Each structure stands twice: as C-alpha cells, then as structure tokens.
Figure (cartoon, rainbow, N blue to C red):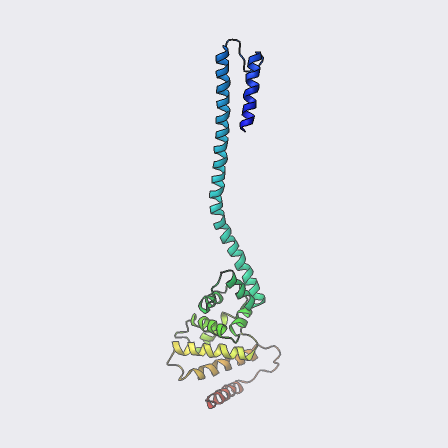
Length: 245
C-alpha cells in the first residue's frame, strides 16, 4: 500500500516538474502545486483509513451477528435433534433414549425420561409401552416415575385404568403387562387406600379387566364369553393369586 503511494507521488512530482501533469495548473506556483499534490496524497491516505475503519466495522458487525445466530441455530439444532430422537425412539425406544441422552436433550435420570414419555409429544404409544415394560432397573424406575405422574385420586378402578392406558399402549408380552399392572396397583392403592385391602387384589382385578377387555375387542374371538363366565374367571384369578401368598 505504501509503495503504491510512493509510486503515485513520484509520478505526480515527475509530471509537475515537466509541467504536463493533470494536477498542474498554470496559475499555481511550483510550491503551491507541490502543496496540492501533498494534500491529494493526504486525502488518499484518509480514504484508505476510512476504508479500513469500514472493514473493521463490518467485521465487528459480523462478530455481533455471529453471537446471535448460534443461539438461534442452537435452538434450531436442538429442535432438529429432538425430532431425530423422537423418530429413533419410535423405531427403537432404547436407542432413541440413548441418542437424546448423548445429545444432552435428556438426562439419564428416571424422572426426566418419565416426564418425556408422559408428555409424549411425537412419540408412538406402542414404543412408550415397550420401553416402560422392559425388565431392567433403569426402565423399572422410569415406569414407577411414569405411573407417579398420574393422579388416580377418587377414581374408580376402571376410570383409573382408562386414564393410565391412554398414555401408552400395552405391549403384547404378559410379563411386561404384569410389571405395569403391579406398579399401577401400588399407585392406585396409595392414592385410594380405602378401596382395596391390599395392592395384590387391585393388581389381579386390573389384570383381569384388561384381559376381558382384550377378549371383547379381539376380532379373532367369534363367540363372546357370557357375563357369568367372565365374573367366574375374575374370581378364579383372584383366588389363585391370593392363595399363592
């Protein structure tokens, strides 16, 4: 930049000395002409400095915008990752939760995961049921936390079951259903201590209601079981369950 200015000055002075420069004016003395060239040089330097200031301002503005954009992008990326996590969960509940935890969208905490499942935004209810029914310590803790989010106070058993089963779809495995109904019964009896003498009775009755409801809505069952047979079935289950204790 300086060498260019020096070349500019040398050419200008050379032109003045020959009396043929565009800056040369007949009415100016040589000293005035030299001063004019100096002023023009100063002007050029000022223009360059102004341009540098403009460039620096542009950089500052870009940096300030960069400070804001990441925050928006952060939310955008977070929403995108959450959407991916939900899709992964619907395809494979375990991998979906792992993805959300790895990306810090969920904490590896039963309460946090339970709230996520209870809220259920964009989640497949079948996938929720499969995850809650898994037999390992963490999933069982999530199930307990999930059930604890439901308020069954002053509800009859059927109403409580309907509310509970609305939040997910029961898995097909009897063992998973067994764990869910046992946890449900404990929560229901905790909130309604005067209805059942023990949680086991509530558990068996809940399990029987689910089985009977399934048989009623199963298209493969051509002949409906009569009411007396259903009641007998329930009492038999209760008797077997209670006698085992």
